Amino acid sequence: MATLHNAPASSWETSTTPRKNVDVPEGLWLKCPECAAMIYRKIMEEQEHTCPECRHHFRVTAQQRITCLVDPGSFEEMDANLAPSDPLKFTDKKAYTKRLADEQKKTGSKDGLRAGRAFIKGRPLMIAVMDFAFMAGSMGAVVGEKITRAVERATRENLPLMIISCSGGARMQESTLSLMQMAKTSAALARFHDAGGLFISLLSDPTYGGVTASFAMLGDVIFAEPKAMIGFAGPRVIANTIRAELPAGFQTAEFLQEKGFIDKIVPRNELRSQIARVIDYCNK
Amino acid sequence: MAKTPSPPAFSLEFEKPILQLEKELANLVNLQETKDVDYAAEINGLRTHLTALLKKTYQNLSAWETVQVARHPARPQTRDYIDMIVKDFDEVHGDRTYGDDKTMVTGMGRIGGHKVMVVGHHKGRDTREKIACNFGCAHPEGYRKALAKMQFAEKFGLPVVTFIDTPGAYPGIGSEERGVAEAIAVNLREMARLKTPIVCLVIGEGGSGGALGIGVGDRLAMLQYAWYSVISPEGCSGILWKGGANAADAAEALKLTSKSLKELGVIDEILEEPLGAAHRNPRAAGDSIEKYVDKTLRELKRLPLDKLVDERYEKLRKLGTDAVTA
Ligand SMILES: [Zn+2]
Image 1 (tube, rainbow over the protein chains, first blue to last red):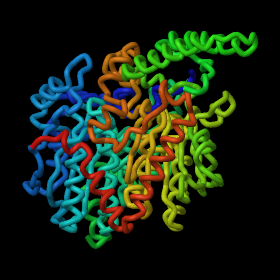
Image 2: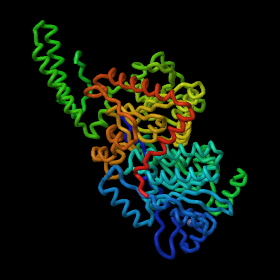
Image 3: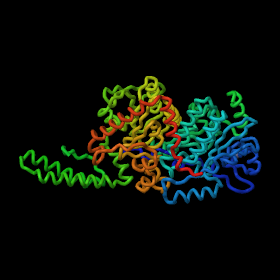
Image 4: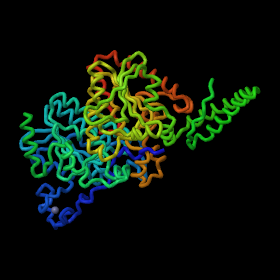
């Protein structure tokens, strides 16, 4: 039976991870994976986690993102206590509960998203930031619930909403319950849309699978970070299916802008001003 | 059983003893007819035996065996059900953006007492059709065609009935270039607020986002031996077990059967299949679907549209909330 059993790529792990954006190694100095310059970590961090030489954008945790994006001290976190409960009792080579405990210990978070109220250049907004450090930013019931609550609060409080995606897609260990978070978050966004809310979606490296195929692609404005990898199916799944080389630059932010699916590529150091500008133009 | 079913040409490993019995039975019936000998006692004995074996086998199907049944080449597909239960089917094409995706079938027709818009994935029955339909993997234009027809249905007050049967959305260059993720995302948002009843049926494979892209509605039902999951067992096994050999374990872990999904509260109803599954008696599976759609649409049509959409939201809103602790 020649069917495409690998087709539903809902996980980043199915794809070729871009070699250039591996976890940032510890130490005072580090080597830029893009231009190979030796850079001083403190300088890199002060410049919104980008390379001072070539502007390579390092991947950031949710906490780092919030720190370098919102007005200092303005983030008021919500639903930080929500935790996954493993309703499927999922076990592969490792029990999901064990995997969760390890990830929680590693990141200090209950799951892979932080959400809350904040200000950017004095403008109030609701913000939700995915954390790739926690199980590759995968979306399970907690991530879906926190996004939905953020959307509902933004609707009630008439606040602009910003979601920053960084995810391999839906979380396999919660199976169909993860998949259904795509429907739930999109339904909440439909109501937000009906209420006239402004939704700014920022796609960072990587954004894949069920995240791209739900809220990430539903922004009134869709921004992406330079060279971020963005897609539905992972590149390896596609290459295996079509049995051919993928074109250069395939699934990069630049490629998506060329194809008409994002509005603008915004370098990290311009993000605050860009967001403030959009909020002002939309009278929000 | 009044009629002896002809044995399916394709055999699943766990069905081999069943197929052997079916063959013996067919031979005996044939012999009785041609030779004019009375084998009634033997035939009845074999029938009883066969029924018992079918019951036993199908009562104890593993998740992985269920996936194989859902992929059986003789399993009825969207166009088969359209032929069986949709009266005066009037197919319409036209996504208005790019081109006609043969994987996505859309058209008007009648099911039971209701005029409806039918939307469904079709995998293809022979080789030519399978290739034309990309084995049931839809492209972005397929999802956009589905949405265009659903919005047409909304405008003219037709309920929507979707038939889900796909391994997943097509993973290819063109599919990504034309924004398959965006197409699915927009369908999720629009189906959530479409002001007309939507009934979704998983009839075979419910492969991830490609299935969900026409799967948001007021009711979600599954045929008994269909599967629905965030990823195929093979894909999951390849990632979490670092190899494709554990598909059976992955299928079990993913809780992808209709029974598991009913228990998890993801689906509203399991539509019973005939003894030995839909490929043994497509008509009976069609009856099961027809009855459910007719009954469900009668319920949904009673609701004012605003209330219908509000209740749909509440239903979607609850998904996975039991999987979260505070
Ligand atoms: Zn550099």
